[in-house]
Length: 308
Image 1 (cartoon, helix red, strand yellow):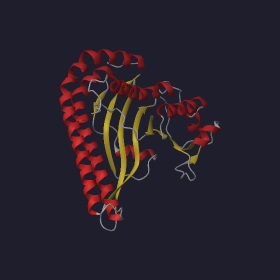
Image 2: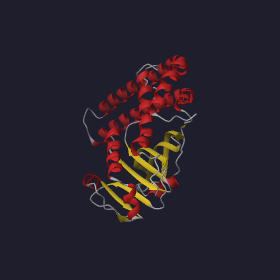
Image 3: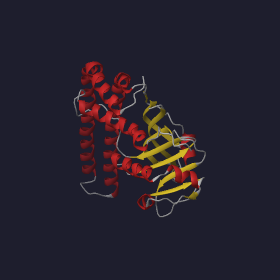
Image 4: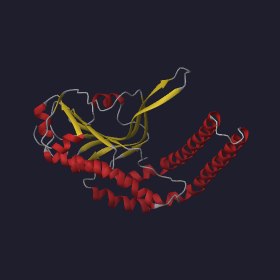
């Protein structure tokens, strides 16, 4: 079943949550407490190790002492993140298939729904050799196929001693949405910087504020200006503000728009070990984050054919 309004999603979510999701949550409370105890043990062990390090170095913050303390703290935070993510994954594997009954024909997976080749073809991203995916969704809304991928794009380098270093190119959500408009070219909307390398010829636009924020180039000047109307540009700016995104860029090609929303927040998060498992706020927040992606279709009026 396909929903055609945001209100449909919200109404159905309330029903499904109370009738099907909530009864499943109590069973996870014990598991959550076990993970929470493990995190507390990690913190206690970390404090003990730091105290030992300080004692060994006679409480003098030499370079070796500071490096050892920083390494211990980073290890503790990494272990905490691992335990928290492990619990969230366990919870989601059970409840997400149930929750998705509230999301029409959308399906949740914790694997990629937008491949690396497609992302490279957008020309939005710098170098990346690796792709780490978290929550992903695919389905249709108002007749448009939509893929939503929470992902991190990165590459690895090694120093002279062979130690790996990870460089994140992009972190956030990428949405691939059918564009119900017939066009043949490629239009790229990127954040304007001091130096913007051109893929195509820069497109001169009517909105000076938009032009200050974004560098737009396209393979077909006429087509790009036809797509990027003043109302489209205004709505595009509104979406960035709604997400509180540090950066939002887009590629329009092959009758699809791919929007990359940069954010360091862990979106679609469930199972905070410091809150009750049945805390409804986390589920409501996840719903809000999901429908805000769908709202892009409404905001940009992507389902309306402009006859290009």
